[in-house]
Length: 326
Image (cartoon, rainbow, N blue to C red; front, side, top):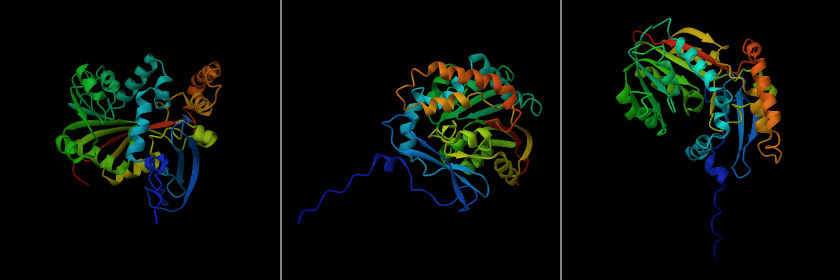
């Protein structure tokens, strides 16, 4: 008797791992769904669900994208779609000021570091700007894409490394080489944030400094906008770590928390990004451009007030690695 051919897997099944029933940070099974977001384009597969652990408040994509799914949505990122909305919400001058402010965080603790690695550097705009404050520092860049090689050719970094920080081959080459390691909105994209932190500390010299900036899942906009909040609607963001969790993890690894900041990292884009996400599948999205521009103006007008409240959408941590292993 002839057998029917096997049913091919759905595209969504190829792009998403099985749903997990416990928190990847603390292991608790006490989860709740915070947001559901559809793919931005009708032809893109799947829906994205963000769950939150009721015990530790860690938020994470569940089910998580597979490596194939991440690669697929990486194409949208390079095509300049919604993934870089936050960056595009700032003028070139404002983006430069933000980068300078982030680099200035390190000035009180180390006036002239010898070497600095920017992880997830992309086109290395941060090292390029930070050189204005640290002209004698050697800036290197690490990124999983060839963008960092272009940055090397354009002399924004002195060494370009392609790959992941947790890759044993990459880690062996970079171990204990740096006085400062920076990660700007990088940990959210790491499949294993704890492993990424371990690797970052491994490439730091004893007494070196780790500068981290992340989206804040405790932001009031997350609850207000749900699936229309930008970090929830970005498929490449796998984990959203509350500041308390990250600080506790760093302390466990023997680090000293030097500064925390919820004000300066705030990016004025929540309302305009939410409107863009809401209209992404609508035939009226092009006609709504003036409405989105108005929302963007409101984002910027409210920013001085919002960054002083729970509506601030990001935070920054500066930590010092122990002089001796913990």
